[in-house]
Length: 297
Image 1 (cartoon, rainbow, N blue to C red):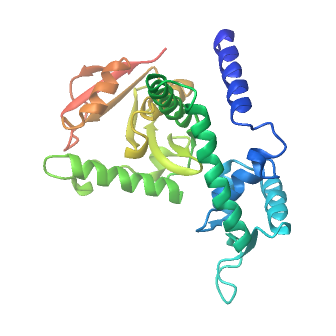
Image 2 (image 1 turned 180 degrees about the horizontal axis):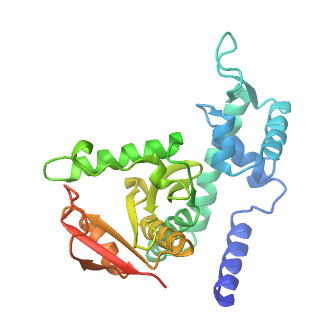
């Protein structure tokens, strides 16, 4: 990694934490540090499940429990099961008290005031530049928060992504998509030692997937690459493709290939941009119009 790039990111982090007051013991003069204030904000007037808060904020259970206990001792929240009379007692929810809702509203107003104080010294043109740059930084940071890791094809999150893949394909193809007409892809084909399914998640939620089938002595085959509309343009598809290629190479494949439909223009553009070349048909996939291959280093 380029040391100059790392230094630039560290410099940016220092500037942001100083400007937003993240180092203050009393964030925005509310009498509590940033961690507690952020947790109070995330709970919000609607309340939130503790497990969801842990995932959303990237906190370990112990640290989150301590923060919740502090807010609870201060009379700002209550923490308890969803249904005290008969629900799943393992699902706990944090809810604002009346005092908590008052402090949440004050935090909301102070957050507006802080944002205004950042913009106020700037000219109109510079405000637009700053907000535009912030949107780009946010977009890129979200992309960097995506985690890609192997997942069993039978995992509920993987199943959800594969169902979304089928819905997306059916919506985009000229005559819809009937899985019965497509070449079957069984779970064991995307599980070691036959292959792998990679799952992309953002804050613990599945937002993409892709698989690769290994063929001894032949090119590996990439299958079921899908990315949710909510994260399109963040480079998730390119990352998935790269990780699938890396897995194939590490397991002895010297090339990867895939088939695709003519209506999937973004996918075709991605394949061509990442070094795939079009080849003759290597299968009889009903919905395929193009076949691609890439040699692996």
